[in-house]
Length: 429
Ligand SMILES: *Cc1c(COP(=O)(O)O)cnc(C)c1O
Image (cartoon, rainbow, N blue to C red; front, side, top):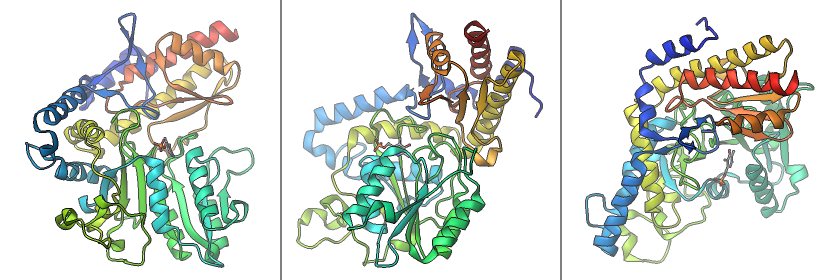
C-alpha cells in the first residue's frame, strides 16, 4: 500500500477499518478531560469497558452465594476456567485442552521448566535469545542453579551480529545445530520485548527438535499480538501474561500451553497442587497425585476468579473481532504506517533522528515499533508524554510505540508522528 503522510489519509484508513468500532469498548486515560493517545499496549493493555461489570458480577456472586459460588449460580467458579480456555485457544492456535489460565507468567515459566527442563550429564544446556526480558533471564539462571549447574556454562545466548539489533533466523538455527546434543531446552521469547522482533517460532522449534531438545516459548509480547499456531508448530510448551496485548489488567492471570503429545507422559516432573488433581475426584481429598487431563493438570491453586473475570471480559472482545485474523491484517498496516511516518519525520528534519530497530518485514514483527532516538531521546519522550502521547521509554535511548489494532487508529499514528516532528524541531533545531 502507498501511504500518504497527511491527516486526511489517516482518516481515510480509519473509515475503511472494519475493526474501528472496537475502540469504543475500551477506556482511555485522560488528563484535563483530554484523552491520551495510548501506544503502550505492549506494557499494559487498556481497560475494557466491560471489565468493571464482570468484576461486579463476581462481587455479587461472592456476596450472594459465598462458598456456594463454587458450584452454584450462572457460572460456577469450579468450571469458570473452561469458558476462558475455549476463548484463549484460538488466540494462540491450540485446542482448549492444551491451554489453561493460572498463576502469573514468571511463576508459570518456573512450573513449566520443572516439567520440560530435564538436564542430564552431557545434555544440560538451555539456549535462549540474548537480551531476553530480565525475569526470564533470572528464572532460567535460577532453574539451572537449582539443578546444580553453572549458568555461565549451561546457558547459551544467541546474540545479534556486530552492529545489528535483531537476530537472523539462520544464526539461531546454526547455534542450535552447533550445540546440538548438549542442549536440553530451547527457550525463546515469541516477540522480543526490546526490539519487537517476532522470531520464526516454527523454524526454531524444528531446529530444537532436530537437536533432540524440547522447545518452549515465552509469549508475553506475542499472545494477542501476532497470530500463533502453537499446536501445529509442534511447540512443546509456552506461557504468556494477559495484561499486555490481552488487556486483562495489572498483574492479570497468565496462560499456559502444553502440547497434547505430552499429556500421557507420566515421567514429567510437576510441582503439583490440589487444583491440578483430576477434577471429578478432586474433592475426595485422597492421597497420591493424579493429574487432570491436559493443561489443567498443571494447575496448582484454586481458580483466581477475579483475575479470570477480567481476562474473560477482554477475551470476549477478541471473539467479537473474530480472534487474530482481521486484527493481524489491521496490525500489519497500522505498524507499517507508523514506520513510514517515522521515516517521514526524519525526512522533514533532514537527518535520521529516529532509527527504527524493529524489523520492517511484517513477518518479523508484531505491533510494536522500537525506535532509537539519537539525540536528547529522553527529553523528547518526556515531551510526548506531556502532550498526552503515551508510549514507553527503555534505557539507554529507545522509545517503544505499539499501535494496537483493537483500540488504536491511523489518526493516532499520524498525530504521534506530527508531535515527534514538532517536539524534535523545538528541542534539536
Ligand atoms: C512482561 C514480561 C514478563 C513479566 O512477567 P510477570 O511474571 O508477569 O511479572 C516476563 N517475561 C517477559 C518476556 C515479559 O515480556
